[in-house]
Length: 259
Image 1: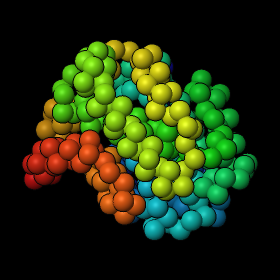
Image 2: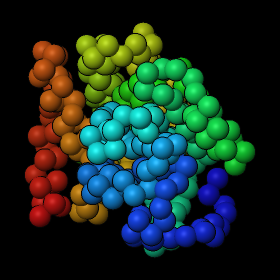
Image 3: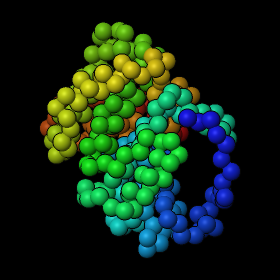
Image 4: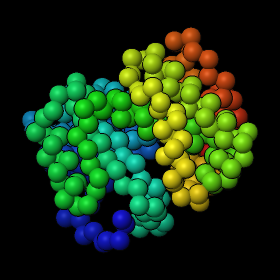
């Protein structure tokens, strides 16, 4: 739960100094993905597995463009954490869940071995039957919460206590549910209701990472969240008024942060 100190075997900004490894965990912000992926080919061998743990829904596609499809599996993580200082990560709340799975839905030893490794560390790790359902289930929540919280600048508890704002959160989730259906992702029929039930159990003081980035004037994952939703919605003819508004209202702040 964050109460530990790690003594890494090797830390470097140059992956070629390390050489081929068994697993590459890609855990950067979506807007940092291009630079990160371009540096990992020296780590890839015949048996290397690449695991993306990002917030968006298409990180695996960008990674495959660089390293090819064989090494890449799907994954996502759920936790509330932030960089407090260089080398110090604050893990807030008891949420620490990972789901991993092959992109074609098969069960493999390479995924199971990593799941068991994480379980041995006390992490709730799951070998997913359908990793895309898992990724989109998380995406439905974080895209809505990230956008609404970034505009409201308040905690999750305050958002759901205000009836009109709570309804905006629900509508944003519903837009993603409809879009997932068009994409052929078999989300549960009650996914919005079950997600709101989950929200009720989250610490009321929770804020989103995107919200914190916006407040600090840093680049943030607008394109990975509402930007992706808006673009896919246009392709499928799905109406997404809440995410349209989130995207339009936050885009100037993103442009300023990116310089």
